[in-house]
Image 1 (tube, rainbow, N blue to C red):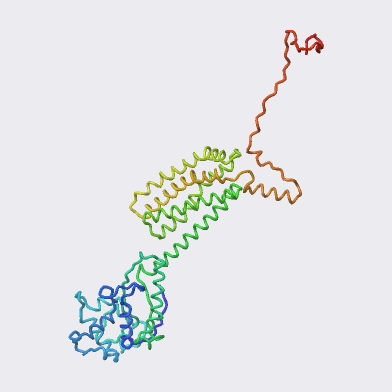
Image 2 (image 1 turned 120 degrees about the vertical axis):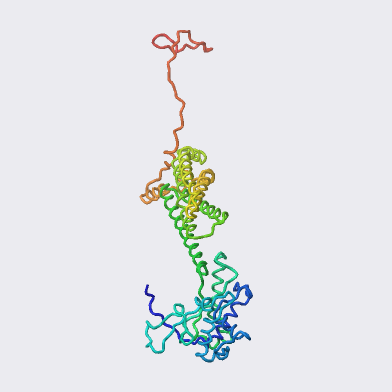
Length: 431
């Protein structure tokens, strides 16, 4: 991959060395704000600091070049000779050369004075060991500091900690006595190892994307449920139950110790899509019920749709249970997420949603979008609105049958207590 040609800002290692040492010493001080533990455990790992300690310690800096800190800082050639001698000829407490211990923290270019300066003649210091007589141009140098917190630190506090170190690197270091003259001349910035501060920002983005996905899913669920049932009240109550399921699944994941990552973010976004199925069936069953009261419609809803909802949920629960056993964390978490989502969706839809419908379920024209459209249409046309909403949901009231019969009896007519003559038909019978 071609990353382009770097443009180096020229600086002299030996002249900048006092500033680099002071920056490192300031960085390793104990600070609760910057989360540094201080010596002796949390020391800055820096080749310049290690070289400074060697050259300023009596009886240690014995060498053929008579190296001292003042001479090395003032004379660039002396600096190169002393630093190269220290790197290649001396070992640290672990028995390895200083070059092997610190080669990953510094990089330069060795130039042969007899060869014209071309890109092919630039050899990285890390690729080829320098000799005492070589001419090395310093390009960059790094220092490592281990903080008292790691990537498991709360990501919001971690991002705040990054801003503290960013301010320190951009502003505070130039207030140090040896660095004031180097402000704007010595490029200085912070980088982090993996995982480091970058993981805090990844977590922040995952949280943002997860909640954005959940919000979008709930909005789409509300729109689809409202259009499917033609009732905005059912859409609102159904979406509220789905939101409760999402919140419960997220709480369950925290309870079992999950940390937000890529897989967890995907699972959270999937929860509304998997939870909407059961509530949608029950909402449609409530909407199609023929009973006129809430409780009667809930009974019809559970009687006609509840069996199908339970059957579908148990089949999905049984299938996801087999994902508990793989050793791969992805499948195990995915199966547990599906199982928790379906199980909680079943419980909330059968019990909580049913209870809500029995108390707040829409009746007659409440929330009916079709009736609202028809009412507006008739009102615009100046027609009266007929309230025939109950005609499709109520059974006609039974009427007692009326039977007309003629009683024929040969018995003499009953006495009426009067002497008035009674009417007779053509056959001479009393009527």
